[in-house]
Amino acid sequence: MSIATKLNQQWHAIADNELDPQVLGQRIPAWQALELCAHDDVVARLLRAAQDGDELSGFVVLYATLPRLKMLARAHNRYYLDDFVADFWLRMMSFPQTRMRKNIVVNLALDTLKRLNRSGAKSSRELLVEKVPIRDVHKNSTAEVINLIATGKALGIVSASTAGVLETVYARGYSCSQAARIHNISHDAVRSRCSQAARKLRLHAPQLLAAA
Image 1 (cartoon, rainbow, N blue to C red):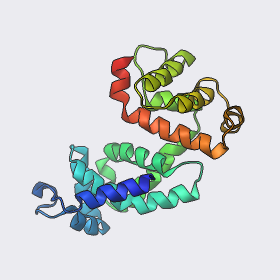
Image 2: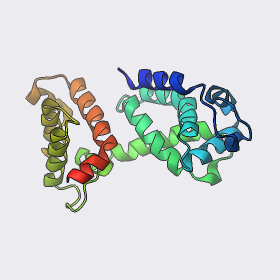
Image 3: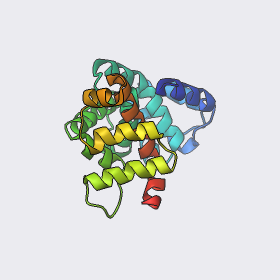
Image 4: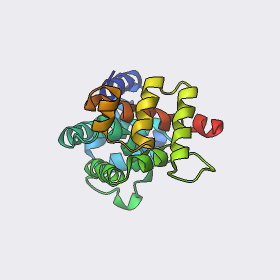
């Protein structure tokens, strides 16, 4: 199931949930707040609430930005929509209030692309370790990456076959094309496995930290 499908299903499950009346000054369902996201003052208030820990407000902003993230993912096929969604959430949480004035949704989407481009300029090893940090081990060392992948495999977060692909790319430093030949799968399959596995590992970071 694609990330877009999952987000759509999640949205339909929560669209009727009401926002805290303190967010927009009235008690309205999430779907109505989404319709109001054409107004920057509404987005700004939802964004501030999200940064204060209101997940429903954050999801409304994410869903309002999703069409632009899809457009950027199509235009920059170096990245997956999964990457845009994950980095968007991080950017949303750190978006400065001084920029919450106009074109907020557009700026959030473009900032997400900038984050991805900066990450993409790093080595694949740096990127994986940065997104899923493991304490008390020298950053970016091969041992750290191998330990991270092995822990993910032991915890059942990634499969044995995917762990092998991750180690080839992230620990041994092979390109996706080289890894595809080594594992006898397509280049796209390597990219997909690496992207999805990195996201799973990132989501389970607390478990990985506890097991390290």
